[in-house]
Image (cartoon, rainbow, N blue to C red; front, side):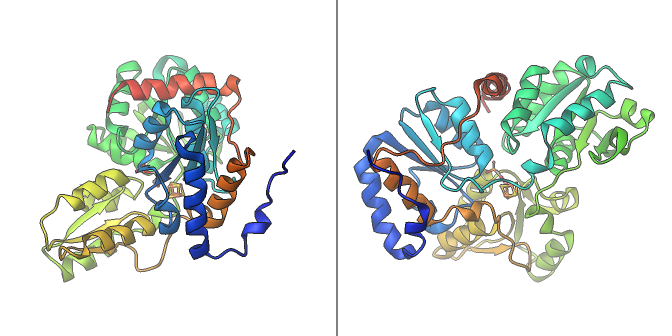
Amino acid sequence: MTATIAIQQFSEISDDDCQALIQAAKAALGDRLLILGHHYQREEVFVHADVVGDSLKLSRVAAASKAEYIVFCGVHFMAEVADILSRPDQIAILPDLAAGCSMADMANLAKVERAWRELSEVIDPDECVTPVTYINSAADLKSFCGEHGGIVCTSTNAKHVLEWSFKQREKILFFPDQHLGRNTAYKTGIPLEEMVVWDFDQLMGGLTEKQIKNAKMILWKGFCSVHQMFKPDHIDAFRAKFPEGKVVSHPESSFEVCQKSDYVGSTEYIINVIKDSPDGSRWLVGTELNLVKRLAEQNRDRGTYVHFMSPTICMCSTMFRIDSQHLLWTLENLVKGKVVNQVQVPEQIAGQARLALQRMLDLNI
Ligand code: 13P
Ligand code: SF4
């Protein structure tokens, strides 16, 4: 029986040497393999993806895929979604299991269940609260939403998901990203005064009974460490220098940044807005550095300039964990019939999580 090849054997292989070896392994696996790549992946990995996209697009592709192996070049929650939405005989793989999402980790089942219990001292959450989880969350939180009549959203469909959720019940508990929740609720017409922040480290979220009763939107106190780096001052400085320039931000950025931006949307949206802009235009972009660098490169030839919003380098350090060596290690093991780093959600969690995801997919946005 062949043994699994150890990752240590790959650490000395240069990025350049990995490229041809990855292509050879891909060719050997043929259509048994599907590599999905999120837009934040580093270039040397991104180029090997069969399909690239934002969270929504990639979850739809995973759900429709026939491949035996779905190798997700992204972060842990994305591979979990691929596993939940694919057939039981398909295998979802994350080349480095340490590639998590620090925002997703800001909410966990114990804390959300505690919030639900504490809310029930003031209101009946099962009667009046729809739980909504951003797709950037662990599978058991998606399962919690499935079980409690709730739903999942991505940055692309969040507005429609909130509209659906308010049709079910009068309030929303939104986790883990307060910024996506606030920016989106504001777009649907909810004033800031009707939104409160649930501080999961405090009793009753640090809120009074009156605040909870009056709130329409209860926002979990989570955030993305990358997108919190973008500040309104960065936009002011850009506009002062380039008054004709345009600003586009991801909705995980703060309310103030999104309000000052000309356009706000998911990674796929950002790419399309810039692609469809006139030649010679200039953009300030508030999202992860690998994507912004790629956009700058792709648009340079038509005289379009793309600037990164923060003066300091800020990359998603967990997305960055997926490197050529881990991808090659994963593929060469598959060629030998060995599965490494499978992400498998137990069926007692996957069932309800699938329900919450399906409610989102059924909105067809
Ligand atoms: P998108 O769904 O826009 O790709 O965003 C995923 C993400 O993690 C952004 O930080
Ligand atoms: Fe998570 Fe932020 Fe990285 Fe997106 S950019 S995967 S939200 S840590």
